[in-house]
Image (tube, rainbow, N blue to C red; front, side):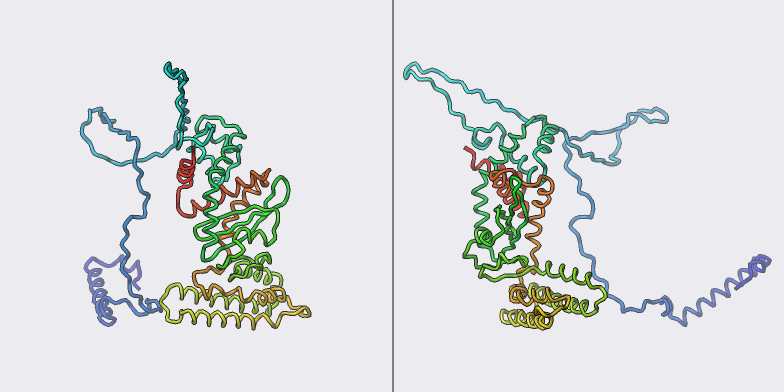
Length: 443
């Protein structure tokens, strides 16, 4: 390295000579290493990856501009500095502002006049036909009815919150009793749709089932749900017995039933799949209860490893690219996973065994034929998450309102929950579908 003070004392020609010498030295070093290639010591210690072509996108990752309803044009009339009048111009930029305007309801008053017929001697009064606009003798139209049902079940608003919302946004006052009557009217018109959903559930290739507590008039009861990938169906009963599940699914249900480990579903003779999410959750609790017990941790890891291998095989069958996913192959793999899991669980079973994993081991042995159904039937989920997600809105509503006050209120609740959740699950607009349903069943 050169000393800075020494360089400052050199003349311009001497500095140029030093620079030329350094450039020659750089050229010589580049020839030794290979011109253009970086030194080997700066390369990452990993194999070079072949770059993939960038996927072409139809749309950019930016917010799509909405279609304007009002266009307000801003043009400068004069120069702010000299005051000269300006003409022509160009579009510099756009800015959109999205807002809502409280819209008052449309109140249509139908005046029906009668006339007297001098020949027949009768009073003639035209019959008013409001089919497609209103249900029965209600003064609330089907569009407002659909909005109220949507706010109640999808937005999970209370009746008084709905009352306040409609008053603020649409400048109309509806009493609490009238809103309740509107919800009952929508539920009555939705009974036929509800029965159709129940039949779809009973004929589905596999069904998720679950139950949660629900109070009616202060008395404990239960809300049962049967769920498929496209349908949600609820039933309210005061009992948690297995007869309710038979009423929901039918006594002759012969499809695949996915549930937790509750014994009320054992009466079904169909194929079953027990929820691995519940079992894994209990395994995690067991690990926390004995954090320093290496035998327990090792046993839990072994059980989870078998489950992960079975899930990997299920994904392999779902992709359809493997040659070992035939019917007999899947049955053989199911028996293999069952045998491996049984070998892990059996040493810890028995009332005399005081091992911490005894309870879960006995559960595994008792429900072993129902733990790997998803291996033989790859389209069947290994967990009951669909039913858990279906009852979650009801659990939230229960914490807010505490339940329903009458049998009629419970019937309204289960019908509206079933049809609204199903429409939303199918990607449909619940408000539009409710309007179509009311219009089709209006007098």
